[in-house]
Image (cartoon, rainbow, N blue to C red; front, side, top):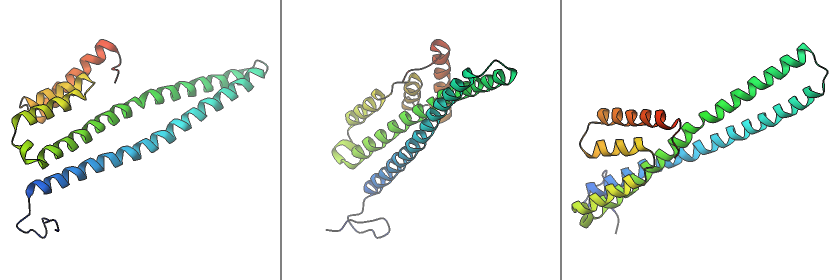
Length: 180
């Protein structure tokens, strides 16, 4: 039996199936983007590691030279470059957070697709509550939990984003960094 499609509907056509297809498409786009991002970050990480190794080699060679203003200036440039590399590596933490959030999105899209696809689950409030609990349990950052709680309680997207940003700022003030 062939499946009915939106462009060629028949009596078997279903908006639920169309919704599931679009949810799967969204999850696939997110996962594909994460793979591409991983590849880029891997190249950048390898490049920064190589730069640190090269700077260490330059420092070793400079240490062999007699004291001079040129040597001191070259060592200062190496130190400044090393500091910039360290700062850049710390900035990569944003990618870890992005990656984690995108993983949560794909999990949520797939779980939502599963519940929408199943008529016995679709109309069961306990299934929806269970889904919400599963989604919330994947969050490790307090800002994500605050965002989830705000949306589920009926807040607008704008209000929820403000609440999450406030929670994130509070966490950063309390801990300097948020482990995830």
